[in-house]
Image (tube, rainbow, N blue to C red; front, side):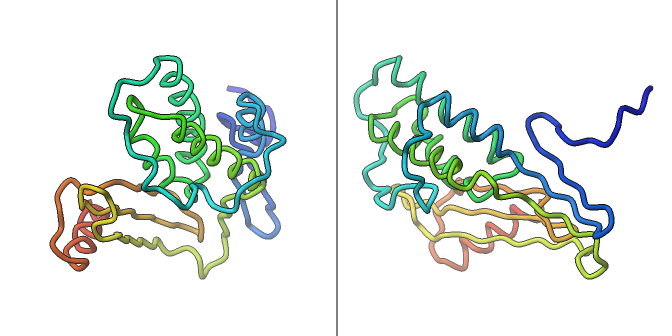
Length: 195
């Protein structure tokens, strides 16, 4: 084994360290710029949210869509998902929502995927910060649920675990059962986070 210097890149993630202040940042600006270029979204004005506000118009298509449309949509969703899995947890819900229509997408879904990638591009300099200060060394966990926010009345849920002030694990998903109250949806989310 040979030491070749300090780590600065790993699977498309930029690693920036400040040893004196004991801080480390993880970001994917170059990867996000690459996907925005690939899908010709560099000139588009970056939106301020990961998804458009009218989610009710993003229902799966009734008829089987064009296979080319499906393939392009899957490429866009997969590209955005890579960022959400590693450093861009702010886009996790958007990715999860768009993934529900991977085989039944419409032109509106393509527009929403473009919206997400343009959002990522506009915020490509965001980074996860891990701070080595003593007060941030505790492991913290949080969960949340949005009661009956889906058309089938199932709730959305998510959790996040943080260490040294930065997220180390997160997940957003649709609950498998229909809750009868906000309390039940929140308790299910808490239970799933504890697993």
